[in-house]
Image (tube, rainbow over all chains, first blue to last red):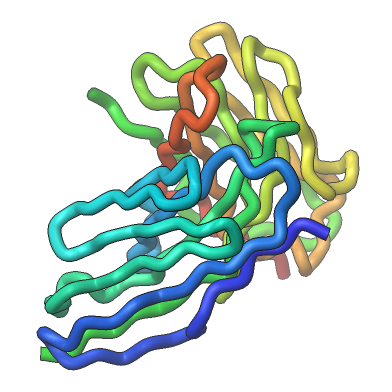
Length: 111
Length: 114
């Protein structure tokens, strides 16, 4: 069964304290892995797409990496405004429109 | 560039009733997908529409149905509402025909079934 699992479920950091979020997946025929950010009461906001193992993408304090079984979202020197739920999703070769999401990691950054 | 807009933002219905949710896709996008997000969970794929045809469906019963119009806007209809249908319903648009074109989401419709 296709599955996406994110850990930890919740993470509390002090401002400036770097950390990583994990997304592990068991999917046949992976075509891409996506990271989204979701603020309370809002829809998910697109961050990155990763296509193949070894690929890395960066945006401000965020860096996403991909291996054959998992992806990491590294947050360097986070600020309170980075507080949000981070969602990982994969797309299979059989249907490019259907994303399979993990349950998300809720990040809280305290000043 | 206009983003994805959804209406209404909130809705309260009674069990057994029917509901219609609406979505306008982002300018230039021709594909619309609908997702259901229960509290504390990731979104779950309901179905996708491309060129006014259903193009993929998740594990949802037939009482969940949809439409896409020539201007690429879309509706999600749910009949015979159940308490478990209470959730945030998200619409997302993308550019069909481009693999891995990222989905751009609206802010959703919060449906409460009592």
